[in-house]
Image (tube, rainbow, N blue to C red):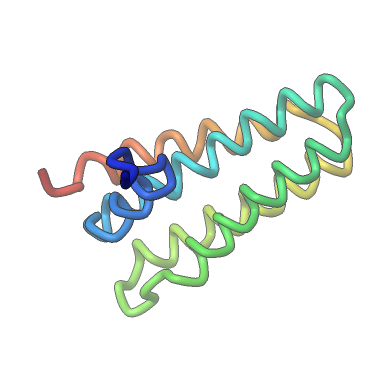
Length: 123
């Protein structure tokens, strides 16, 4: 008998493959924010390795967002690039200082960006 229930990974893959570009950006922000929340908790609990690993995942998402910017779009792309570079630097400083508040500041900024992208996402 075949398994009629798809795995959560299959649902996630299907959601990614069928998503609009705007929805993909929202999903990336959601992932980065989830990792940042986990990193801040781990840092507060002095779980240095876990905090580092979660920060690394969020930083990888920020790098992907920055590298996929269409710089031909002008001022908006340039502003996003500046924001992503700021976030990456702030997270490096958070790691160095072991300061979860810096992680939360980046998370708040990404939350604002996520909401803006969600507003332009097609229905």
